[in-house]
Image 1 (cartoon, rainbow over the protein chains, first blue to last red):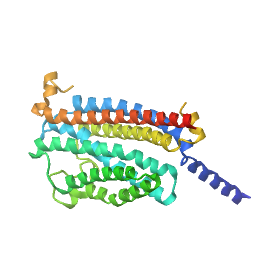
Image 2 (image 1 turned 90 degrees about the vertical axis):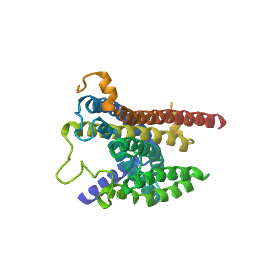
Image 3 (image 1 turned 45 degrees about the horizontal axis):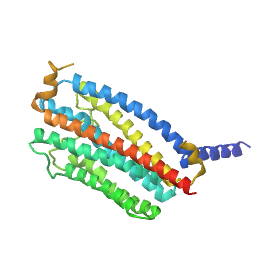
Image 4 (image 1 turned 60 degrees about the vertical axis):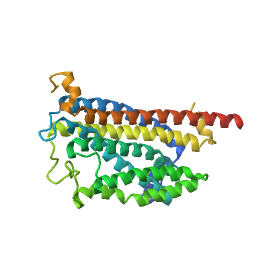
Length: 255
Length: 55
């Protein structure tokens, strides 16, 4: 008796999870998540910019230009995190064939590409006064530029097929192969000599930054997380509208 | 507030171009994405309506 009860519970919890893999159930959930994340992003951006631009002290070595770090590092982190998230959804899409998976990965790509561009541009503008050059072909910067081309290649390939399902699968392969680039970016300053500094937050012995400088960077990191989730959820809902246009529930949901 | 004046704030110790260029690039990128998101949604809803009329 107890066993069958447990089995039915497992079955139920399984069903609860899979329900959210259905576009009809995820559409309103994504809408709620999007609204909450826009608010969090706005509030944390104001706090983070206030602390970073008006309260954090000048850096003893670099002067005021170090303030680029408050947006450069969050953008670079999000560029890598979003790529891994995109590759994860491509993997589940290929293996499980769930409809929502490829919608998720397609929705993530443009925001990931934007974060990559922001990290490259802010890094370049920081590099000029800090290193004396806008660009250098070292491992960190080169692998990060490759990340940008992977995002662009993924989006271009997904859009190139008339048959959406073929485009989903072909672009998913690019995304998965390209995922090896992310650990290369992350560890490049450890593995090779680079002008780019090594990790100063996730390191043995704790962060090497002063708390007054670390706080705005971490607050803006959470702001970037919230912004990216909101933007991705917005795009997920748009893609659901595009792909599920013949579904009866949709006409009701978009009213 | 660590700045003696607003002009000192905007000057960023002579590195204003690099600091404000970075923050400006982020702002432009975010605004472009927000416009693209709104346009994308409007287009999707329009083609959904067209689809309903055809049916």
